[in-house]
Length: 140
Image (cartoon, rainbow, N blue to C red; front, side, top):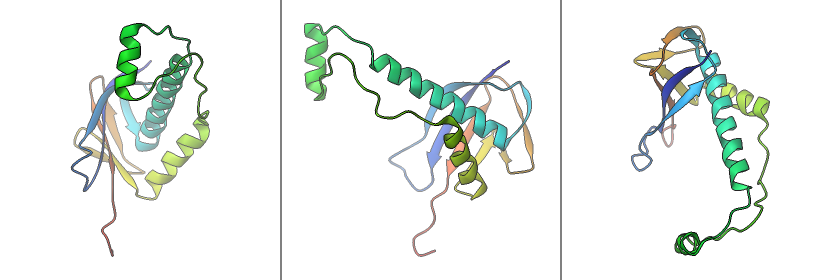
């Protein structure tokens, strides 16, 4: 079973970056969830989405005059097979995210509830999930 949530990611102290928000379907059952489970499910969903986008970009596409004009306006024209820059090691990506959470680089919220290493939150369809990256103060 899976649950569809709204994921937001932001960085403290960066007004220009704003808050990126998008819908993500996580491979989790509704109910109690730990931060580690949520991080693993979110990283897995994002890596899967990245892999799908990379595969789609690798398909041969036929250039029409309109798409060629649009590509030229963007400053890049790609024809034929586009080799994927790198393959993502899912286990390493999950481990890196877990380590960053353990080191206090970011916090995880479900609605208004902050998840730490021991607490759980109730996850349901449409829940708001926030990954908040913390930035140390200069000279701190």
